[in-house]
Length: 133
Image (tube, rainbow, N blue to C red; front, side):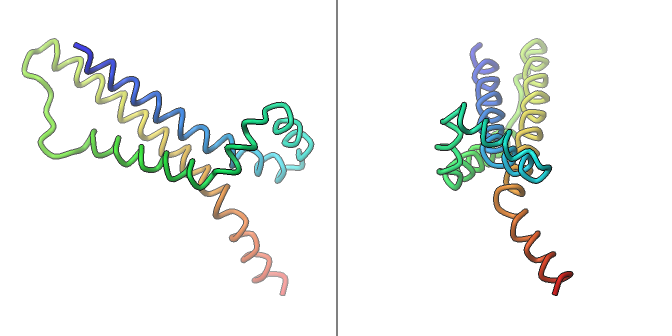
């Protein structure tokens, strides 16, 4: 009875943690890149928890990546089947569909955040080294 609710909570938690990686790390880099550094500074000064998230971005990315890995395992593990009762089977299939959507959205947000936090600056430096010198 509570299994669908529990799956939904995990989906929302997964989406929340991957979104925090995007907000703490990708959004400020994007704002500064398009010339809105003052907006980024105002954002960080009005929401001090963002500074703490950015300070601990390694653990934030690691924790949310582990959670996504566990969620993917729970969704795609071998031997996982829905109940044979038609009503429960329909609810199980619907929950699976939504959980897969949450996982895909979360993985996309996580990948954008990871790219912005860890790969964008090294790639920009590599580009500058290749084409400027």
